[in-house]
Length: 204
Ligand SMILES: [Fe+2]
Ligand SMILES: [Fe+2]
Image (cartoon, rainbow, N blue to C red; front, side, top):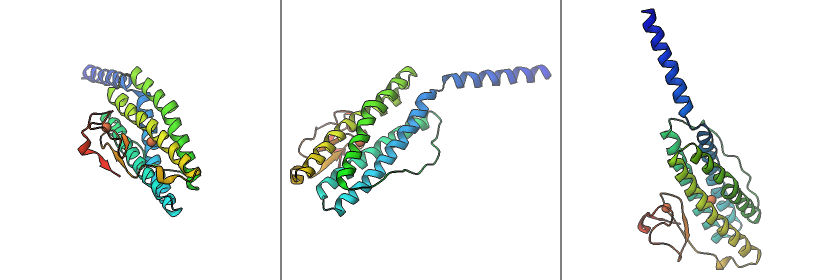
């Protein structure tokens, strides 16, 4: 009986060691950080949209709405991957500051730039090393979207600073699968990132 217990205990310890060794530890941490970043960005852009409307910058507000939607999709995608790995993110409260729309646009540019040049490239490298294809896909969709967001934000800031807000796109379309964001009038028939057909896109 004692021998049986000893064998079972050893097997249990061995199983724990093997499962720990196989956990993509860095990717799990990165997914959690990504979810926090995307959830915060989504809430922040929704607040920036409200502020832009208050300041009479309705066209800029529309892009903040579109970007907010896209970031929520990224957060949901990262969450699915995290849950598939048997992990959960502890509750947190998004922290951000709302200033003037010009300052908010600059903060948005800085945030997108950090995500696409530093954060996601690092996350993708870790996910490749730990062999987590779902995470590579989710991080890549977000990174490629953030590149486009940075360009849209830069155009919006330049338009505001030169009094040309009316030249900005009047609407956007967001892919519900990957968050890819298109300006009205320049939309692919299938999402360039995930191949979702255009009729599924959300119009903002
Ligand atoms: Fe973004
Ligand atoms: Fe897509």
